[in-house]
Image (tube, rainbow, N blue to C red; front, side, top):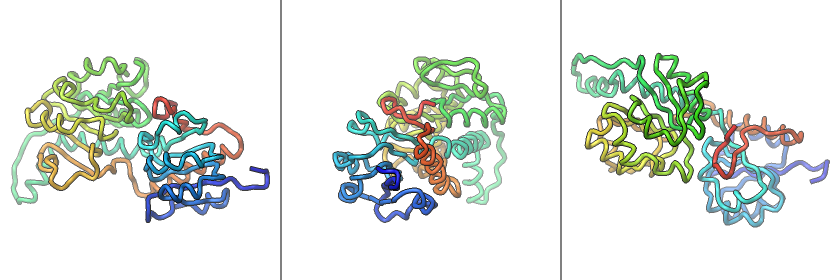
Length: 326
């Protein structure tokens, strides 16, 4: 690329998806191309310097990868990058950034709302209202309840702040233990997970999907939890073994689950989880707030300007670990 040339940005979208809001600001800085499958990637990747990925179909990108002759950087418009990673990308010199920070507050509010919803028994309130039934019950306090956040990254820290703000006691699980974190009572190492599970009233999965976390919540994990504990998953669906979760609910090994992500998405209409009164489900939307798509473009532009100036970008992903570690 010469000084007079504009850099080339290829935006990978889903077929039929509208261009990201704010794309005109990207076009003011770069030549913008669009791709949505293997053939369009093969057409657009030669000469591309940067990719902005809004749709994560690794198979198409991996198949077209050999023609990416000038690619320096891929930006994923999501916090998780597990679906994007394949050996050719991991082993290449192409850097990857993600959307860390955009969804933190929204997800934390979702988690706080879910914990309060369970404590105050709002699902039953709604069912009784629909039946026009007046039924007084006593409900729980969240004050002094212990929250174990599995994945003490930026989302986990935001969850801990809100949990602390409503009087709860947040503990975290991360690669390294830490006792002086301002948001958590303590952060425990991954190796201490099964020591911490029996102590928690709420267990929140906020970890990325990696080979180490896939299937982490299985029969053994559920048996380790309190019978009165609730599981909340806003991380990735495959971290939880669904069949083991159903067995744990049926056997009373845990008291309920709040699920935003699933092993299979969308969840089939005949899936048994729909009918559990102690399970709440949402359509992988915990972090999506009004205006989030434009916020993702603005974040990309901020990083793009740093890249264009030869400065360090933020949210660099450790491709071996599978997440942004700083």
